[in-house]
Image (spheres, rainbow, N blue to C red):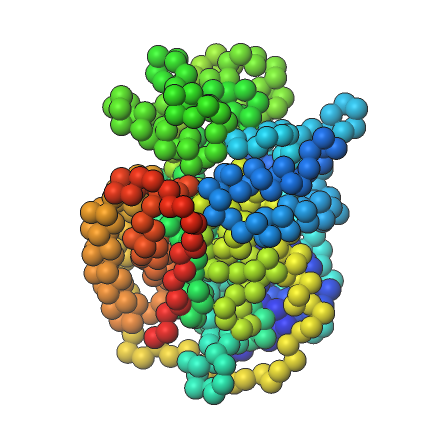
Length: 536
């Protein structure tokens, strides 16, 4: 088996992964692996923008307080303040990559506001902020990669490369503290399985939105990083808190298209099919309440009326304003016969963001030596029980910089341990792909039906029983047949589903994104839900 050596192995190509790679490239050789193309990530789909205090009238303390309130006071206060205060450095990193954020005619930043914010502090690049940031980072990463020699500092890009499992010292028979030595990976183009050997592995794999039937996430969001870390023995925290974006476009042909929260920030209100505003009866902040409240309110309204969706009304702003401020959203709606200037926009909630994940510090440190986690796959304590709008890209920028600052100046210079060749045993090529497709569909449907916006003990118990059986079937399939990308994603998806259910069963209260009819009140003392990693 081929072994490829590097100083830092970064898994994932969104903002957290690419920024980590760019910072680490100054210290050593970086391999960036992504299971699709570099642009196949959630960052590329982010519309609204990035939080950062830029207005002299705004303060870090106000931003931190808004974050804590939105997170139902489960966030870690010191973490929230640290990330908010380091945000300007992350914005400068993006500007250095060539990102041009929108400005007003007087040269000041064109800051917008979103749900849960008490001030305008969202930097944006129109309504395709993530796409523009991702494109700029990819250009810079490719520039660095083009200058990289075969050995020495720099970046080695490996697209169409999916990680099978992390290589752990204990599993290959080494004594002492269990640590991550790298990973076994599958080249999707050639079918080759080889090992990447690195003293430091950084997981930046994004979220697990595809664990639900309806999601605005791309197909790549299968929770790979969380599943990899859990199998490696890392602690997992707060997986019960899955954010459902309140306003996904409701149209049979509109797959995964979000109507950005910035639309509500600029004056849109949520109304029923009769055009009547309904959010005020659920929360005094109306349509600008935090996402957990808005999503739950929409769910309640749809169940009360029997309607398939609710609507956003921003007609008062006029066509000229909408085409200038939201050109991408306006055009996409028009493709489906919806004119934002004259029509109500049909919307429904959809799975959007995982507030929990691999337990990690702001500088990426996990409970496993040699393994770091950054971005959505990590749980730093910033988001608490619900993420404040546009805090995700901010966290990715800040934590990527802090993680590189921790790893770079003090590289691991230990021995290059021998990694055993990947063993296929008696596995044969798969001949029943329909089984994978069926199990994939069943997991997503049961998660939507039993572990959605509103939960009960009975629903969670049903989900837990069926997932236990499915995980056993998937394990049998995994060892019987040669690995494929679909099998690996299904395996990871099932792990994330089970972790979400286990975490939800442990939280006997309603807080933020976890709302259960059996425990409708919020506990007086907020506690984190921590699951120990797999030790098999």
